[in-house]
Length: 162
Image 1 (cartoon, rainbow, N blue to C red):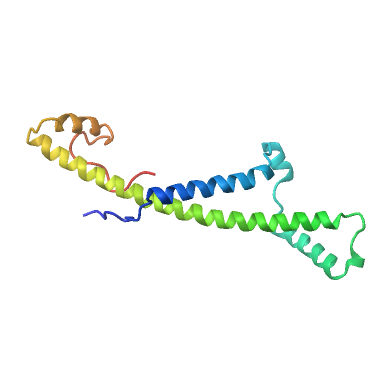
Image 2: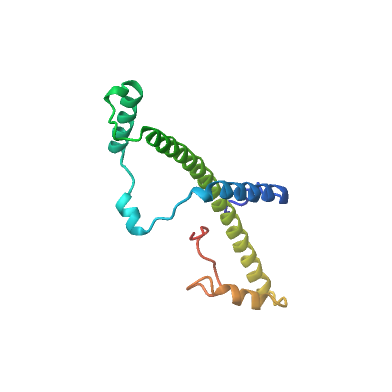
């Protein structure tokens, strides 16, 4: 027997509204500072790797602890602003990614629950079609298109494809 109702925690209208408002507020706060890069620009500017982040961190460490050793050609206020923004953005991305992962996991469970219920409904419809109950033969024939090579007999495996 397949697992059913793996996720029976649902969002009510108030929660959906609150999430929508929070997303609207987040978009309003972030959008003015977001920049679109072309594929060429993304390739050109890229992302500094871990080794290069160590160079940035060491330059900042020297500037903060031994400023006499810092280049006068660097705008250190801008350097610090860039650094602080990068740390803030990375922290925000990490938090958002955690939320995305959780939402994706919840969606997977809801999808699985829906799929299992649909398979149960299809099996019931097959039974009712076999008893010649009006309407079920049409329903089975319409749903059978989603079960390749099985016609109207047995549905595919108990796991959705995506």
